[in-house]
Image (cartoon, rainbow, N blue to C red; front, side, top):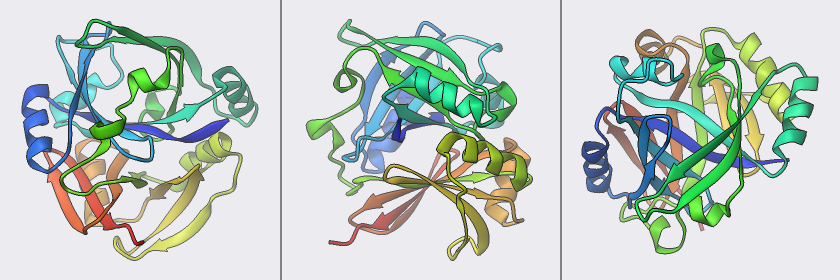
Length: 254
């Protein structure tokens, strides 16, 4: 079963510089460690269990599916959903028309511990349009920030919605129907002023937008289709542009 958005992938050119930028913006940043695929990361965890992954390449890896975004400036390039039954979810999603490839992943933390997970990715051309999946092998608490690590000076509490810019809706809507086993809902996004096809995974929403809004056009022209904006629940309202990544902090009532 797919439980929620696990994390958003934010590609940066220099990890230390990005950590400084995000800390100055009021986020608590936790160093994650190094992957055997030539990347290293830092994490910004939220109280709802989701997080932002700041990731950078330690060495050139042109075969990596995110590497092509590096010379284009990076930003939010992908999103991951949390599964508690990866093989079962992949089988069901495949039966609904979207093929995913199962793989194994790991990361060596700064304290020397190695954490492990299983993942599943769509075809490379769907990177950032359809999600990849993750299921923990080692306990999730060892991978994801928790406790005081999810408290932020800017008041961010969780992830509300990720908006994805697409050149046209039909193929991507079908991909998300396969992922979520739901039809989705066409709504009008008041802030962007465009129609958005919205899907829900647990407490989180994913919106697909294809209209010629200036924000969507900039993403499509610079990086191609993919995530353009993350909306975060917080105690205040704010707009943030951190490097090439865009965020909206939205007031959490109550």
